[in-house]
Image (cartoon, rainbow, N blue to C red; front, side, top):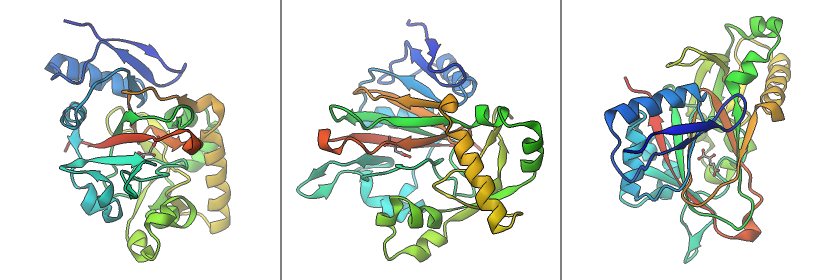
Amino acid sequence: MTTITFRPLTPNFGMEIYGVDFSREQTADDIALLRRLWTEASGMLLFRDQHLTPADHVRLTACFGKVQDDIATQAPVLAHYLLEGYPEIYRVSNKKIDGKPLGREDAGTYWHSDGSWMQQAPRGSILYAVELPTVGGDTMFADMAGAYDALSPPVRVMLDGLNAVHSVLNAAISTSYTKEYAGKLDQAASKAAIHPVILKHPVSGRPAIYVNEGFTAKIVELTQLESTAILKMLFDHCTRPDFVYRHRWQLNDVVMWDNFSNMHFAVPNYKAHGWRLLNRTTVLLEA
Ligand SMILES: O=C(O)CCC(=O)C(=O)O
C-alpha cells in the first residue's frame, strides 16, 4: 500500500500529491483524504506521472463529485470538441488531423472560472496533459480565497451582499470565445446567471471573490461606471503575482482546480513549438 503525501505548491494554495495512481481504483479512505486535501489546498491539486485511459480519467473525476456528462447540451458549440465515445471529456488543443481540430484552440486564454455563467456552476475541472509543446503553454491559477482575505475590511464590507451577472455573451464579445459564437450571439446571451460577488464555498464555507474577466459582465446593484471600476480593481487585485501559481506542464500531469476558489488562464504562447492537447473533465457538486 502506498501512502499519500503532499507538499505545498505556493505558500497559500495548491498542493502536489504523491502516492496516487489514478489508473487504479481508489479506496474509500483515499477518496475521503483526496477530497479533504482538495478543499484544504484551496482548490488546486497536482498529480504527476499519471498514465490514464479516458475511462480512468472519468473514474478519477468521480472520486471528487458528480461527473458532468451533458457538456454538449450545456454548450452545444463545444460538442465537436468532445472525445468520441466520452461525453464527459472535452479537449483543448491546437492540434489538427486532416484539417480537423482535435480540441478547442485558445480555450481559456483569459482569466475565468469555468461555467460561472451557469445557475449551478461546476465545482471543479480536471485537466490531463496528453501532448505538449517543447516550451510554453503554461496555465496560471489565481487563489480567489487568498485574494479575498487580502482585501481591506472596508472593501470587504462594500462587496458583501453585491451580486454579479455572468454571461457567455461577455466572453463571446471580448475573448477567444468570439470564434465559437460567431453568428450565434443570441445563443451566447441566453447563457447567463447571477451569483454573489463574494461567494461562500459550498463545502468549506470559506469566502472567495467570485468574479472573472471572461464571464462577469456587471455588478447588478451598481451603476455601469461603478461596476466597471470595481470589477477592474478586483481583476487587478486577484491576479497580483502573490495570488498566482503558474503551472509548467509535464506530460501525464493531472491538474485539478476548484472554480469557487480559483480562476485560471491558459497562456497561448506555444504555437510555434508543437502540439498541445489536454483532456478535461468537469466535477459538479453532489446534490
Ligand atoms: O488549456 C488550458 O491550460 C486551460 C483550458 C481552460 O481554460 C479550461 O479548460 O477551462
